[in-house]
Image (cartoon, rainbow, N blue to C red):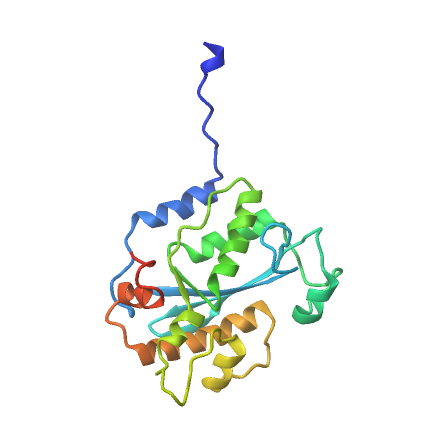
Length: 225
């Protein structure tokens, strides 16, 4: 019988169970009733497998307002480091900012986001980076719905013979379009703030009837609640 013993179920930490439990509750239908978490990561590079998250910055949106007092900024201690990417995000190898372990950062992040929809510019890059970190620590993937300002912004534009849509719109493009200060650009929290302001402006233009409609606008065949 020893050869046919069932594999013991992986015991997940309490903070994951707490995070998972939030999804027993359905998200509200209306945009106004939902809280959104806008987040950004600064990383050592663009390779999900090889690179690591150095910083996570996040903000909450409530009643179409940015809750700055509830912002989250986490610096993570990593052994992998890339000097070239540091020229962009400015996080130095021997940074004086307080750093915590990747697992501690994940615990804080999951406790912060709960079951809220996650908003980001090219959000799946950040989600994939977090998912790889979760995988390294023996944890399942994120369960949250996602909203991408890069995709949603395109839905606000009219295609004419005079003005053709670009294939990709950067966060700088959105900052210029909505006259948003780029003072803290290329910091996780700074980019999350720019994305938050842009997201509110995009939602105001699109005027979706509910959360489900907003999610579907990104890619009707892919996104659903």
